[in-house]
Image (cartoon, rainbow, N blue to C red):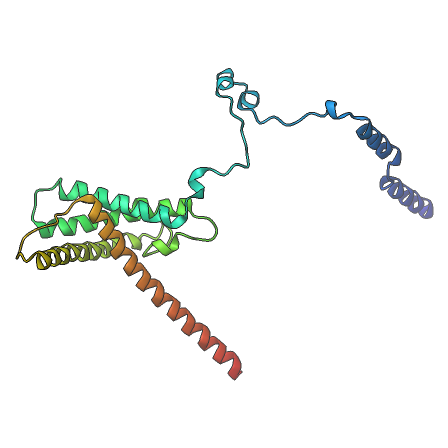
Length: 232
């Protein structure tokens, strides 16, 4: 009885995996008989896809593989423009909106810019980045938004950046006075555009120094690991 049952299981398994050759022949014959005129092409027309009659007048086709124009802009151009734009906005609202002492304005402006960078700019960079992390080179503290300690470090860091920007204005005015032969005259005042340029330059200088230090530390650690493996 057991032998009969085993034989039945083997025959059912063989039948299960048996190829239906007649069905394959029918499918091949059907594909050969289909004329080119009968073949249906995929439509990318917006009106046909969405069923919206208002889209018929637009005469546009939807391409799912089309790359948008914004993604063609290099990452460094977008990063520098975003940093410049927010720095200029912070300058406009703080420097021209508050009637307080100049030193207090610098401290408040640095704190506001640090807050903007931590809450808006860095999360925006994280949103736009790919798996290559191309925007890390434009952040002083390239950590996730949930790292709350970066909030306070960004405040302190950008206060230092704004103080350096102030010295840029002082040095530029002294240079102009030296060339023109005048003394203690304010030739260039604070305004959002030049302020944004100075802020981006100082910020990228500090970020470059930080990145250089990090690279040197990593190279030193790798060299020590290689020395350790050779000694073993």
